Amino acid sequence: MKATLLFVGLLSLAAASQAEMMRINLKKAELTPMQQMQAYAEAGSYMAQKYFGSTHRKIKADEAAQIIGLDAHGKPTYGVPLSNYVNAQYYGDVTVGTPPQTFSVVFDTGSANFWVPSTHCNSIACFLHRRFDSGKSSTFRPNGTEFAIQYGSGSLEGIISNDNVNLGGALIKHQDFGESVKEPGLAFAFGKFDGIFGLAYDTISVLGVTPPFYNMINQKLVDDPVFGFFLGQSEEAIGGQMTLGGVDPDHYQGKLQWHNVRRKAYWEINLTKIKLGDEEVELSSGAVIDTGTSLIVLQTAMAEMINKQIGATKNRAGQYTIDCSKVPTLPEFTFTFDKTDYTLKGEDYILNAGNTCVSGFMGLDFPESLGDIWIVGDVFLRKYYSVYDLGKDRVGLALSK
Image 1 (tube, rainbow, N blue to C red):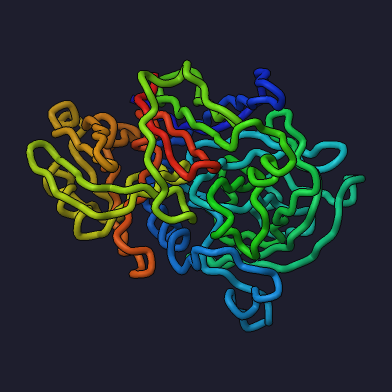
Image 2: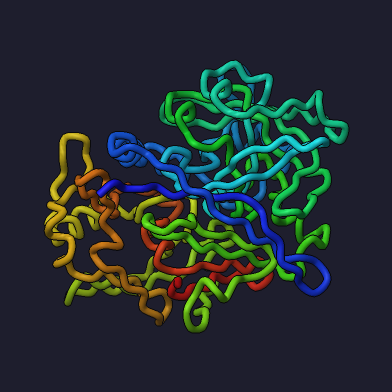
């Protein structure tokens, strides 16, 4: 079976009371089995950079050099990249400037900044994507603050700029965003999208830049400070849908179950128990609900234990694979967030990449500053509709339909 990786974007609107609720339909793009396997292989280094070293608080511009640090050339650096660029699956369109310049971006609840490539960028990756030309925008305001984000394959460097951003018909005025002027590695070159649209808390925003959704709230572009994600299955025609300012009950069954955010940084909720088949383990962990990550990422020792239990073996590339014929007989895996169970079948947590079946459980040793956390990505979110309530600091989940 040919596997399909799914992705986000074009715009349809539905009227709400005073403001509007934006419905953004999800695009999907196809990757060859080889490209999928490469993405899984590279996911570890990008996940490590994404979640390592975060200060979990807003960084003011005047203290950026102290907290973020300077590289050998005196430029500000930051150890947390803006997204798991390679392995994110869902993306969509936004426009920047006047007249509008269109960019495809990953809508990422695991990061807080918005950035796109710049015409000032000379990297191969930039030439293969759409680039922002500030000289063509009448509403552009220069800022010029430099930033650098460390990746395993090098450093993404850029400048902070300011312009109008249009998302789903809502015009966000005077939004600060990043223009990348250097993008490292082939991973960026072959990405199906241009940049990243972060939806996490402003406490992890690089250089303290106000995230776009915060400005949507401040500028009264949405009635409710919430957004929701429906991520479609690979065999479905629609990639999915993101809503801003409300939720779409047509995409979930029953009632939303709400879970309070543990720390206002990522969208992290309480993980109290896991169960694999008949075996269960009580936990006191955090689960980060991350639309910008394809897999379920957890501490290495636990990942090895789970993969052993389901019969997955590690190949030379470090990926856990399993005989595809065994997938229908695999045990169910259940997350318990607070007191509510969310169950995945084998077909949910195993990814089929061209008749090669790869485990959706990936091991990674997180820094002690993050504590015991799990990163719960699209493997889970394809089955469960998710809502992010910035006003009440909570995440809502319900079975997708």
